[in-house]
Length: 421
Image (cartoon, rainbow, N blue to C red; front, side, top):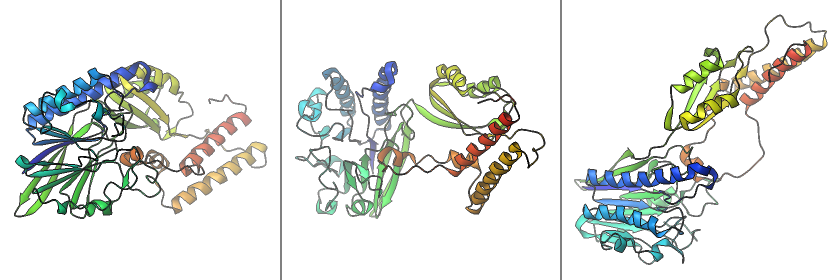
């Protein structure tokens, strides 16, 4: 049996120029997650740590920062745990590579036997004591000239029982990842005959199987962007030989402090802004990035100032955001006569609302609030892919909400009543 710890996309030294005074806080959180990862590897007594690219956010780092990393890698070596690293697309192995400028093994006061960096010149490392070979498919340029897995078949290497691969790049999604720097396909993964393929580049964890090959993205151990979903963990991977069958099991382990959550609140059950603040306040957590999404019918008498809510709640969270997905309730009272201006207006807008609702029912759509809440793309796809821009089409739920608001405001204005915008 072979036990691995797989991590990637630590992005140590990221500047986070958009975060102002919070940038230093997030940088330190990222290093803390790396240190906790080392703690976990030692506590679990794993055989091997894999770092699948972008350990550093760039090739320009102060020596002191590199020394801190080397000290952590040295802790692994002292615990008789080997580490294998591949460059990524941020710490790319070009002429200015940080891995050319610094010898991590020497800085950690150990040898390449314990800390190996795989490069185009050294594409694999044989670990006889572990009966394993680790293959790193790496380029010396940020943009790969071809797939890193093109034509690769680990069966040609017969030095060891366990065949492990490492790649930093994007799993091909037609129309989404075509323009990424390094792209490969599931068919190519299946053709490698690897026991396990450790991937980096996507900051959200995801695992899969192509043919007989198990592959996984570990995701970033601490979110690289403060509101990033799906990050905050590393993967414990166990490889077992049972009667000649190679079995792979993966166990996620949380190491990051930052958590990101979405909270859906039905506004119809909330009577006032102070009541809304009270409900949100129950989730207060300095490590939490919280997005509150208000849904349901918004009573005409309920006055909520979202800017005030955000200002009031911001100190209670690492970051706080509130979105209004409510459907404005229609004014109460009898409808106006159809032969009046206001009656014609109401009849026209209500007719358009009815058409949209009928069309939604015919398409088997879910309720409006649910439809709007589910439009976020999968985290891994959103992190990895660059979607092509095209014409913007308004969501049917948004159209219905807009028309209800038009009807509400129009009736108020035409009836000469106060309007709340």
